[in-house]
Length: 481
Ligand code: ADP
Image 1 (tube, rainbow, N blue to C red):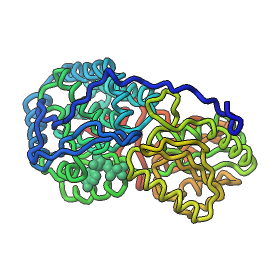
Image 2 (cartoon, rainbow, N blue to C red):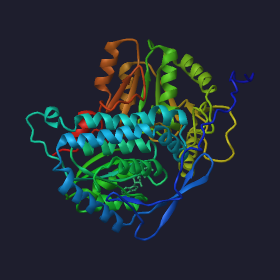
Image 3 (cartoon, rainbow, N blue to C red):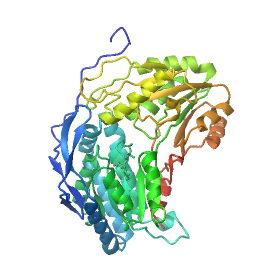
Image 4 (cartoon, rainbow, N blue to C red):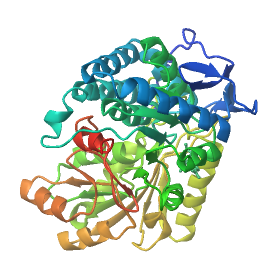
């Protein structure tokens, strides 16, 4: 234990990587086969914790996207939409089982490619991704029971575009309900984190899923735009930034495409004076520092009732000093690498804005690795409601803290945001929970916990956080006429 911060120094406990094998080059997964990109262009994917190149990834052109959509349409018409639902369920179930068998490999690849701590990939991302496939496999042949008195019809071909913060989990959120509802898929992972989606493509190939039912095309925003603008796509499901979400919405105006958008957030985590304080401090830490703050529903705005503010901030600072930032492969690591140099730059820009706005900054005092993209967990007190750091999404381990006196005041402050994805409420009283949850304009509200996910519960936002729900029956409905 060092004297300065009461922190135990642990010997490194590194997860081995010798049993995973990455290809040097990954092609496009179209019509059940691996196909070279038509323009023969590839880009590098790197490990953000070491800046080392992991593999080369194919860059899909418009022609490649067209090929993928044609394969998906053919598979939809000839195979998937005419197959008995109970047979479709078996395939989805088989994918879930195979993912479980490859769980360790998937977790390692997620950590290498995305920078998140191995503990999170292993205990959260991968099991939840498997559970989404299991959950929707169960619904595939029970759609009529799920939606009685409706004529169940799938939509057709779904174009799905996902971000880099939960690469495998977002792929599961998108693919599993689409398949269960009888659709076929063209999915594009984010350019900095394509590897687990490509590993999933290998699993899907091994599962014997008919060719063309799932196609995975890699590339950048241009590839994403080619999916959005393709005339033979029936539904666009997008998770990512509000800026790109708005672009997508504009592109589909005047078409018959269905759209669901899960966008940014600036979620309020509210601690009332009767809250269990130690538990709340854990929830605050989990809410903002989990996954380096790369969580669209991160509890990035903390509101603490004035009478307990000093105690909460003191305990939070103490808890922050016991966090470990560093090698994501180390099982002791709490906070891994920021996903990219660009994102680290964005976070640092906001930290400087916070300082220049006159807020008081406090950071974890620790060494951070000299290579790779790392950021110390950071909190700001003395923040105004109107300040940029309290209004804009930072997407990093940066928390703003404000105080309040009355419940009405905190409801107003929490709702004073262009976003409305999630919120947290910490209190001892059920009646206060119900009062706040009915007045907060957020899609998901956690009470006395934060960042808890389950395939059966719907997730999605209000206002600029998007529309449409994923998860549960709501998520299935989004893929039905
Ligand atoms: P972030 O800021 O979190 O990286 P983005 O919204 O830029 O989020 O990216 C999320 C996903 O959207 C990625 O897969 C990215 O390649 C894709 N994308 C980026 N620009 C566009 C676009 N104009 N049309 C469709 N997809 C896009």
